[in-house]
Length: 405
Image (tube, rainbow, N blue to C red):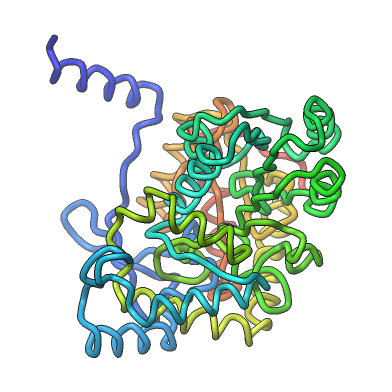
């Protein structure tokens, strides 16, 4: 077999379909976010980022930077090993206690990413609980899908946010049969939110555990910011809350929170936790400072929601095809992979605005889009610039606009 030829042919296929991913070479600037430096064409360009998952700008917040700098100076760069072999730093213990308290659970467990948290936990539960059936929302993140698949547990996939279909599937199994319902709170590509209370009601009725991914909600919803489950008054009803520290918290890593026995079970049987070097102490210290800050500053969440609503309204007013969204995500439909990539390129090269194109397999073919994520640090001037730039790109590419709202 011509291995190199095979690799080249497959990559050419991605390029021909407009799905080849090109990374923007960025240098974030403390004190200037959402501005950044973009290296292209052999020189730096000042750009405005409109697609960051650092939703609240905590990755450049002084309280986080100071905590990390202090931890590096006092604890060094790395943790020194896995959690079991010299790698449990005191910052890890403090952060897990803080996360458990935030989620109103007995315990929490840190992972190196939200992806690893999802994959390890679902894989462990599915593999270790005899005859467990996992009921998975059809739009769940790849990390959840992979965790379920690798667990080799039986699975049932219910239509996205369709509680009637979920109940139909649950009815297939006796009440005493082990069950787990896995779903997200905010679905990040469409910006919709799951009916958590109704799913919890079904879980109670059919004796199922619940597994809620709050990755795109943690820090941003609820009076203290722990997520949509808190906002909707359902936090204590969820069996397992999972989230990331790489988005609104502003650093990197993931976690689960639940009962003491459940968390200890995953800690004791989860290979993705047991055999992975633990997070650097400075990361844990930064996350700890960020969580403590977010718990006390609901005004940041209020401003964030206002900025997202303003961007959505401004784009709709000029006829740009904003998809329905009830969250902070502002998806703008393009519907073609090549045009989506061209729109992103034009925004960057002509207007110094960075919005990454979202193509298949992240979203279904024919639903390619630009996913805009406003932050509290995007000003009215930034929004004006974005609206003008998008209108120019839409006209240049001949993409259809809707009638002004």
